[in-house]
Amino acid sequence: METFLTIAFWVALAGVFIILALGIVNLARGDANQASRSNQLMRMRVLVQFIAIILLVLLGIVTGAISFG
Image (cartoon, rainbow, N blue to C red; front, side, top):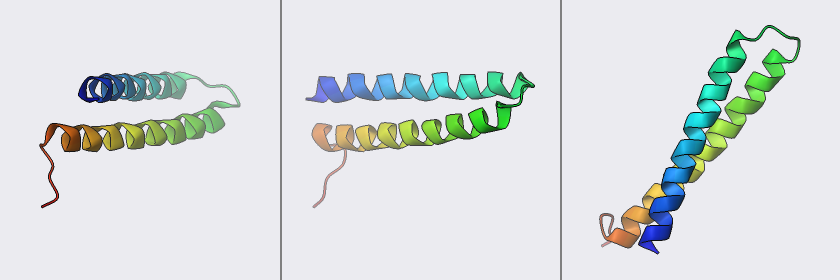
C-alpha cells in the first residue's frame, strides 16, 4: 500500500507540474480562447493539487508519520 501511495503521489505531483507548465505556456498565447483555457487549466491544477495533498496525508498515515492518538 505504501508503494502504491508513493507512486500515485509522484504521478499527481508530475501532473501538477505539467498542468502548471501548460498554464504558463497558455499565457503567452494570444488567441480568443486564451482566457477560458487559463481558467480551465487553473481548475484542473487545483483539483490535481487536492488529490496530491490527500495522497500525501494518506501516505503519512500509512507510514506512521501521522497518528491520531
